[in-house]
Image (cartoon, rainbow, N blue to C red; front, side):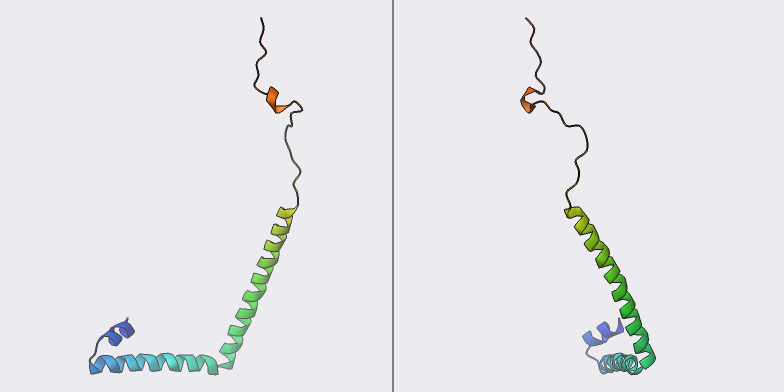
Length: 92
């Protein structure tokens, strides 16, 4: 919130706050890049996530391939012609 406010305000104090915020984010980014242990953990998390998504995509591919196979029809099939359905025999 301070970053938004300080970037809108034009006072010297607001400008200094904005500069400090940008420096803090720059320093934080540099710390993340410099930390080999943190970088290793991030890489492991990324690999783990990719593996999990790979499993999900494989399962989705299997579901799609199963849907493409024709399904056996179930239920009752009438052997009469459709035109005779619903007709009532007339008696004189």
